[in-house]
Length: 196
Figure 1 (spheres, rainbow, N blue to C red):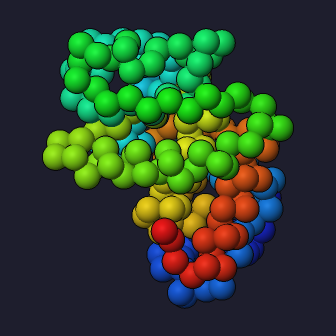
Figure 2: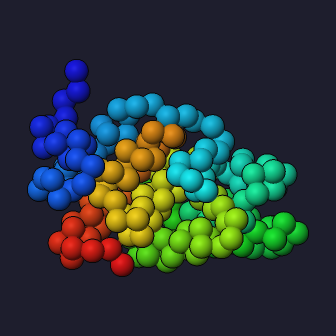
Figure 3: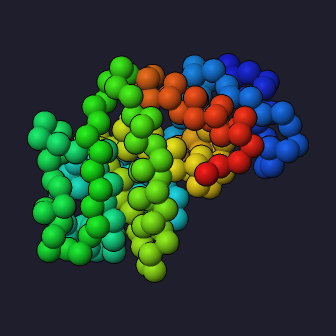
């Protein structure tokens, strides 16, 4: 039996947050939400229509990306000591590239990249036939954090609903620092009353 609080279940049951007072759950309860319904652990998974999360192996497989008609790649592990692809790597594919040099450590502040990454994803989906692949090294923490932030910022989802939407399709696990940063974003968006 799950140890999730009644408040979290109340939030999970709400199709429309106006039916209940929504409060951002504690990080420990949000972590448990990630494993309510096991998703997959492939190199690449479609977690929302036209939004894919995956790892460095999928990121380097240009044939795979072409076969899926990926038009945009968001690398959440950009840089020499991470997944060093860059725009030049995809030049012959027509893929639009955006890199975020982030490290998968709880002390790393990924939140300054939430809005620029969300804008990149939104622009990708606004492109006719656009599909975006968001990746990091393993496709678990950095990439999923940026997709969750996008869903919260541009699709007006609460953090609980964003986690449910993604975890249904892929095993993801933002590190404890990233989860706390997402909690702060959730609180900010909740108190502002509307997303940007």
